[in-house]
Image 1 (cartoon, rainbow, N blue to C red):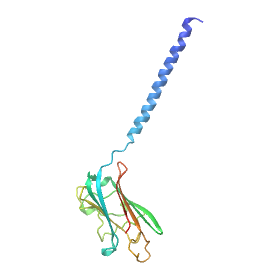
Image 2 (cartoon, one colour):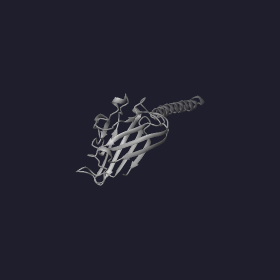
Image 3 (cartoon, rainbow, N blue to C red):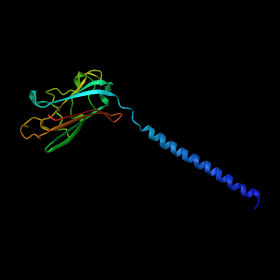
Image 4 (tube, helix red, strand yellow):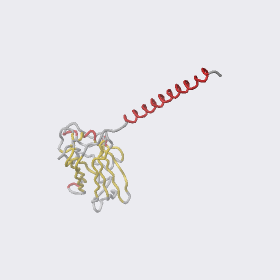
Amino acid sequence: MSQEDRAVTPVVSTILMVALVVILAATTSVAFFTFTENINEPAPIVGDTTGEFEAGGELDQQLVRIKHIAGEDIAVEDLEIIVRVSGPSLDTEARLVDLPTDSFFSTAIDSSNIQGDDSIIDTRSSAPNQIIVPADSNMWTAGDTIQFRISVSGADFRDPPKGNNPKADQLEVIIVHTPSNAIISENTFRP
């Protein structure tokens, strides 16, 4: 075999190795850039919130209030509120979504804002049922309060419960920033 015939093999193998490296680099970069597109934006920093739950009270209203004490302002449309209720024979959850943000007159919760067990969120218009109090610039800012009612017919926290209402003994309220899917407030109440 001549010297010229043996030199072809190293050249072909070098070209194949370069082609293989280029293909692997292209595949890896596509996978990497696809992964980085799915990274969520960072969650806003909420320095502090306080929670209050009033079971009973005037007109047997079961009011939940979560007040933003310190931290960044958050657009109300970017919030989702998870409400979990448990008791001796009760374990259920509802989510408040698409929160009303237009004006003072459209801040009431209705059935279109509830996903899950809609029996635990009170949507009657006869008592306070606003999401942001006071209604302002569609932002949940320091000093603003999120407020809604728990229905006594879906989860009765009164002691003793009245009628055939299901007895409830624990309420968990979680506020989620939906663009980042991060929990920004979590409160558990045991009246």
